[in-house]
Length: 190
Image (cartoon, rainbow, N blue to C red; front, top):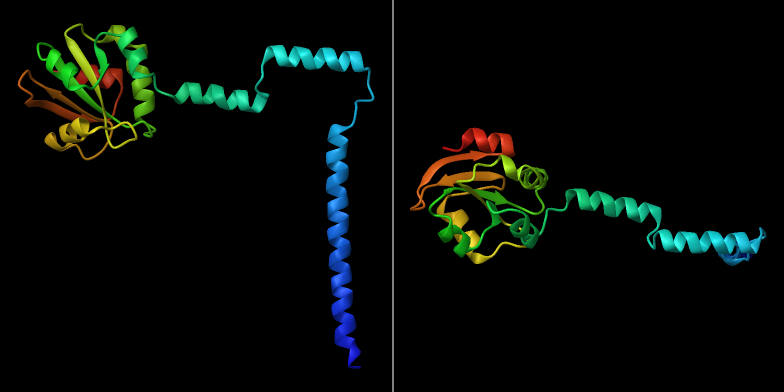
């Protein structure tokens, strides 16, 4: 009777060991199957592998993720400057140099789910913007925000991204609104 707990403990350890052994051996069999030579015609398999390598080095599911990322990733500041003349990333120089145009500050965040499509829409429809308008993208509380942009947001009391502020040549607010893309921009500018 005194040995009953000891036997029970040994039996449990034996069962756990057996379960661990079976799990380990099943995993090894699966891994070995992945590295076994194909039983089909090796020449066909080699041709297929070479074709896949030349087509793409990225697995299809990763390629889809990359394509999705490309759709949502905003253009770089250099792309914007190269492709457009009136939709520019904020710098103190851009703000100063555009004082003779109608200026709209677009407070943008690179993590914002409404800012990203707006940014893409402005870039796509840049030809619809009036030639005397300068749309300036100001980073707001994101990884790219610098102190000058923080100061600008504070100056205009911006409390969240996707805010638009039209300012005059002296920097005074003419109009302010939240949200929208090209169509709303064109409706709201003075």
